[in-house]
Length: 372
Ligand SMILES: [Zn+2]
Image (cartoon, rainbow, N blue to C red):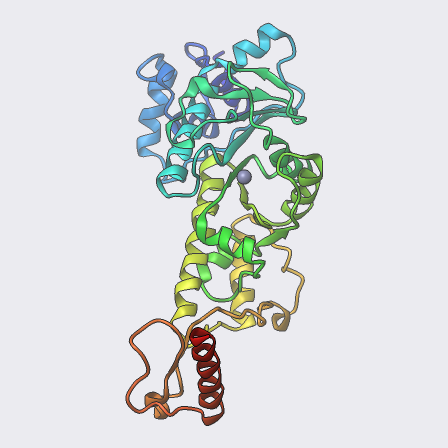
């Protein structure tokens, strides 16, 4: 009687870098475990692995799942077990993916110098993290560290980032957060240092993939106070603006968390550009927002706004874009009141006599002072 390998057993084998036993039968979900991932150790080896990839080709189209899953209670304990786990093929794949996301952060200008950090949870009390003092654009798999969720280092030759504690503030409170990415993307960080709420109900994709953006009050980076503050906000928000600092996002895997970083910075950049056009920001309705929040929940992502009424959803009506030119109503186009920038007012502009009088008085005073 051939052995039947379930998805859970396949996950365990994959994690250890082992092949299914010769002649074993894999359930469809177990085949997906091997078929949906690229692990060099399995390429063209073993009848079952070959069968898995052949079956995969004819199977229904699917979305690859890169979430790292482990059996609860199975964390390696002894130094030898930890080293073997840290150097296993499955962990190597994750290390490479962290390096890829680091490169993308740096290439998009989301990190400078040694800024930013990445974590991926790999056990009940285990996570991979990036080291301290390293440029995220040029990391190698051998630079990665293994730590517990109190940020005690368990493996790796480089010292782990102290900001991992902030990531674990979220992971300890929110089990769905399997990976966190922290960076300083300029557009979103600009909102964080200007202490301006990011307005909602402007772009549907942002409502679906970012959800309600959280704001964590400023605390010194790397401290327990920061971990607590960000953790409390991150528990219910997948993208968190850290006041006077930057952004931290979480996802089910490292690319998912990275995508949120792209989403939030792109959103803030677009809002900033739109605000400068002078026509105000056109919001969609609370009813439309509700549909998007429902869609987000159908995709398996929670949203703290799910219990709110439609009229409460578009909550950033107090957003005041720092526009320097306000577009006037259409009939009064020639009266455009542009302040600063450009080559002066249009020919049809009318001066305010009161303002003119003040300007004349100030000019007179300055000239007098220059003469003395
Ligand atoms: Zn930072």
